[in-house]
Image (cartoon, rainbow, N blue to C red; front, side):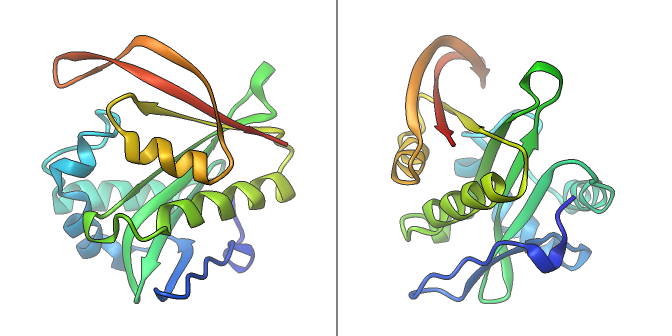
Length: 179
């Protein structure tokens, strides 16, 4: 679990932005920014749409009990507008971790996701026994592919017909950053 005092600090000159642990007071903002089909269409089916207050409460309860993985809110001007997380792997993949993120649509295109991915990646490499961070993005999500490329991740391959989303078979892109 991440020590809130050691949470990586995100600073962007054009925004008052930071990364921090989730808290129950984030429920209204979480519903506001997560309840967007443009966000949900690029995430796993476990991310519901519509995104209700009950979904937010369920997620925030999970985060309150989280002991293993890293889950942080992306906060802008005092409101949680997105999320970034790292899922640490086990067994033979114990030095690998998967990074994932989403950002509310009003904040797209401002460099926030790229800055958050860069910062969290650097933080994970410095504070955990991880030598490989990876992300899998839907082939239709070119913006997320650019975020990863701009954050120093390299495309390792295209996984053909590896995702089913909204009844469609999609390719996905595997990106990784190795330390």
